[in-house]
Structure formats: structure tokens, C-alpha cells
Length: 180
Image (cartoon, rainbow, N blue to C red):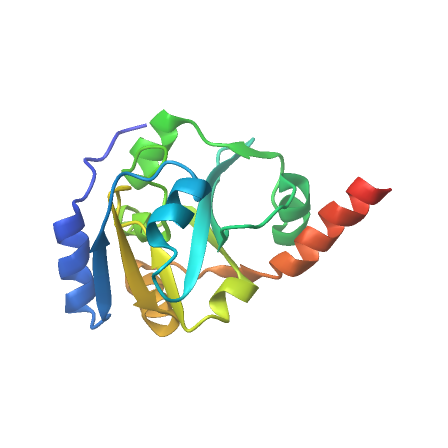
């Protein structure tokens, strides 16, 4: 696997401007956990998220973005999207495929997967019901606020067609399994 050089925040912001996606950049201390994010960005309007970079046993990659407080099981996500044996992707794969490091996973990393998109993008249906969302700009020292329509335009411009999954249903499955 050839490691691609990561794209910069500056290049991402220029791309968003080029495709007409309005955004706001908010600088903050580095964020490594959802708890860090809540402390530093709770004042920002819109949905706050967490992201997973997953790998199928046979080599496919899945970039999943959902609301920050989601409690799901990977096996339920697998079944929902028809994937086989998902596990967390390695830091090396993350850098090679999406050009970001652990702690900086973001749907905007699809910017680094444009030539021949190889990453499947999965989005939380309930997150997409929010008019505005917040994501890292390829690193964890800032947050970009973007409208739902802007996020969709971004994916179209990068050649990705996200799967939108009902994460409320995934959480209900996890809760039912826990209670059983």
C-alpha cells in the first residue's frame, strides 16, 4: 500500500470554498476524546460527532460518522450495511487511505480519497437530520461547522455516495442485547 501525503487544512478549506460550501473554522486545543470535544466545542451550534475508521477482513474500508454519544455494536453496523467482519483500521492504514492520524478521523478525510474512492462512507441518519454539523478539518486542533447540505455537496464533489443508517435502531439493538 502506498502512503499518500496528507492534505492540509488549507487545501481542504480552499476545496470547500471552490465547491461553494460555506463553513466556519473554530480553533481550539487538541481534542482526543468525546469528553475533550464536549468541553471545548459544546458552545458550537449543531450536531457534534465521533468517527470510526473500520476495515473489513477482506480489505475494504468504512468511514463512519455518528452523533457523539452513540452506543452501538460494530456487529450491528456490519449487518445494517452488509459488511463482513469489521474491525478498527490500523493507524498505518488510516494514514495511507485517508491521510489522517488517530484522533483526527473526520468525514472530511474523504478529501484524501478522491482519485478512485475506495472508502465506503456511513452516516448517522439522525445526525443528518441536524441542519448543521461539526467535524475536524483533518486534524484535531480545530472544528469546522458546515450545513448538512454542504456536507452532502462535499461528498458529491469527492465521488462518495454515503450510506445513511438509522443509528437509533442500532442503539436499540445494542440496548436490547444488553438487557437480554
